[in-house]
View 1 (cartoon, rainbow, N blue to C red):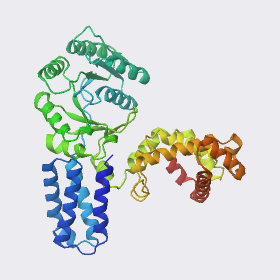
View 2 (cartoon, rainbow, N blue to C red):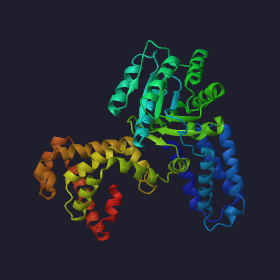
View 3 (tube, rainbow, N blue to C red):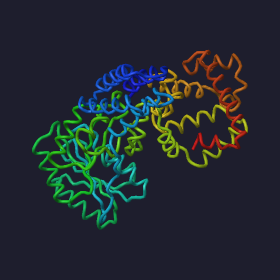
View 4 (cartoon, rainbow, N blue to C red):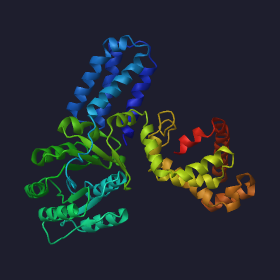
Length: 440
């Protein structure tokens, strides 16, 4: 997410940090690079123009000239103006009589059905009683896809191909009301393009059930086309919020930065992967931090809390603090870490000096390295995993053959393991608090 834009902006920021006082020419030169970086990231030109103008006005005034570190002050201004561009966060409207109805709309292929499952997962984790409605009778297997998602979540799905979507929505509402459900999520049909038939059907559904939220689901990877799609829906059924899907596949990020400014519709969620838990509540401050390469530690902690159960944290902390850390423990840590999402995403959320950009590792290389490490550990015997110190030259050669790697990689992993064990022994002096924070 944002890899291209973040890389370009960091180059500009590194040049600013090296300078002492900044002249107007220095500021203009830096902002030219920022402007190009944003345009190449497919940010709408009007948004780029307004953003750069605001940053320049603040950067050539007393705010920067009086600063002890002018370069760092400009970076602070860029961060603040980026947050302003991304817009204020707005939560879901879950007030009023139950069930509160959330209507998902969007074009074909935007990820509405998957978003319905993710939203159900998120709301159920918050204590809501959720029911899903399969309101897309046209796309082959759309109903079946939602039913599979509902079954995996243990959330009921209402469907009836014999009913038109508006009538199905009303029928589902009565059923949800009588069943004591607190939230009803309606998946609707999409089209390959905006057309009157689609809008007429959506308007009929809205008239039948009066949803609390109309969330437009937009594929972030379509770039500026996402803005045109959002404007089309805005002018016909007035969405109350946006879900930007496939953000994990969008290295540029222009849609996320532009869409609120251009359409006026607030972003409420972003999809960051295929798993049901890969839906994040939109937070402009944390998103700006990730765009600027500052990481998202709060987001990382939230993912860790979902990935690690309390007993696992306690057991791992005890082992690590006593120096009993083995390859079995490392394998368990890697399995748990994978629950937090792709390792490239996890590393992206680390602050600048620790993430994959600082280590010059591409997202693909991160995933490959994790898989190779898993293969190496899987090729060890139980005794070797529990007692790594017995790994002599013969054993290392055998493990290399079994894992499809080489002895140099085994040696490198052993060195990393030994460094980790030393680190954990050192952290024992903190009374285990550092370890608990690391794993939970």
